[in-house]
Image (cartoon, rainbow, N blue to C red; front, side, top):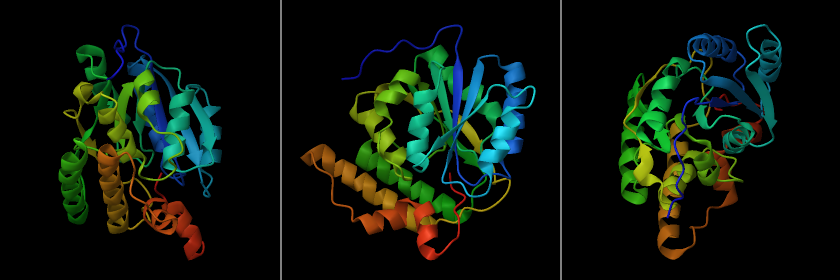
Length: 274
């Protein structure tokens, strides 16, 4: 059974957590949009960029920006793990009673943050998952639609991999798993939301527009990633019935779910996936 958490009341304090790996070309524009939002949305108190495994100077760009007038709300933190560890650390550091987690590659518009937070404040939801619409390649659409149907069957949740989510801080801390560094963090996180009894207070009805990346390209293989995430979903469904996950060989997990390590194995490329 889930605990009862009161929705944030006025004044709502919103923190934004952004895992960032090799996004030096994207974070300046993103920070400018966050600054513009803060001027019209005083509920936004801080934006925490959690830098992980970056090799392109993303940290230096962010540190310089945070010292500029008007950007005092920016905070820069560091994580030794990948996306999952960075998200968990950012939420732990947050000081808002509502927390938004979004990717830092420019595919989401910070201007939609108030829309994502509104169901928490006005309707009493604990977690809100953005429903992607807009740009996506045909291959990405096919994989995404198939994966949504499978996770709905296996885990009872459809919108899993969206990189734009919000929630009550206490609920996020109760559901975001610890010690999950890779790209399976979202599947495990949403599985916890349902498994711990918060599913009836999770909304996936808010549409958020997905834009093309501003700069750079992701280097992970979408098919390989999808297979890794599907295996994770099957494993979690198995755990619900038997109490034990399926074994996932470490090498396969690295190749499928930790692209920053795969780049190193291949001999030097760096991934742009936060």
